[in-house]
Amino acid sequence: MQTVTVDEIQRDPLKYLNQVEAGEIFVIVQADKPIAELRPITPVRRQLRPFGLCDGEFTVCDDFDAPLPEDILNVFEGRGKFSWIRIFSHGSSVAIADYQMTCATISAIQITKYI
Image: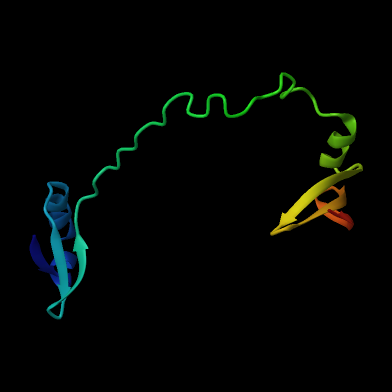
């Protein structure tokens, strides 16, 4: 590891970059204080995920890529309303909420029942 000043690097940056590319490491100092380290980048080798990692964890319906029903398609295209029910759980309490959605905004939320 070599020490080099900021002024030296500014005078001939390619000289130092070529040395870094060859594997050298430099500590850059300013006013005799180290301020940075210049070193080559080591490539990160990522291990490939094994094929079939989630095999058997879930199933995909046969009609997964079938066209959406008209009422749901209308909501995505901004031409209709869509209602659904969602169950919320927070700690030991559970609530069922009834949503109505127009386009991408929720227009009404009503908690209908606590279980």
